[in-house]
Image (cartoon, rainbow, N blue to C red):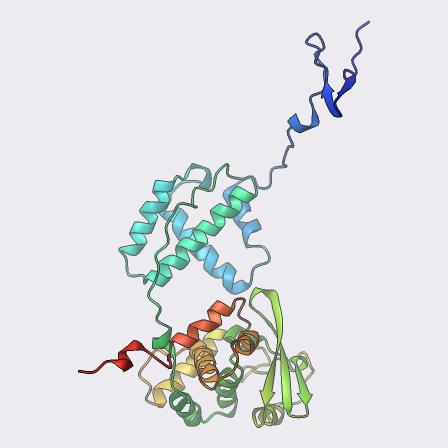
Length: 317
């Protein structure tokens, strides 16, 4: 009588083999030949994008969403129908527009990130974005670094106590504008030589930055009555934390008043902090930890802004 169970196994030289039986339709395939079914993760592109953006910072989500919306408007196709030539055509259209190479690279990186994520999730059978070449932009870091004299001049012309303290904090700590806006009094802690601030920054990473005197004393003197959960820098008419665009306006207004004819942003204070610290022989790993750089290579870029030596010094006319 034919049995519906899997055929018996016979052992040959310590290798387990299955004895096939062509008459048995319900024969069990070897485990190595069994196909693992992956559950469907998203029903459409919008669901996929929502999963892709989950957990990212609001700043990153805003840029990623804007970049991918722009891409889908150009190709006018669902993600599953896009081919490499669509990506290349989009890249060419960006390069021929008004965007800088750096902006083009960022936009294309957003699209590549989405497609790569879709492939890893099993939403797409292939990562068609992998062969797409990204432009290598010119390193313009040196153009965005203020001198120490310029920074001090910008700070000195600011007459509003809160705004002056904002400018000083940006320069002395080197924190990002988003990190500055999110600071609460509970993040600050006193030390014998000043204070320290715990920052929850980019990439969901926490770091501690020291605040030397006299900036620490100025921060404590500025504090009004409020809970530890109160934002350090608040609006004039309410207790809500400031928005990064408000900080940008403060920086631009003070820079213009100081006669600095450059498109200064809050991030320029961070660049200046790094450049001066390295110029004064601060170890790279200390600057990296203070600024929250994920890679020492990012920090080492500031070494090339003001090189100590160059072959041109050894030539004469």
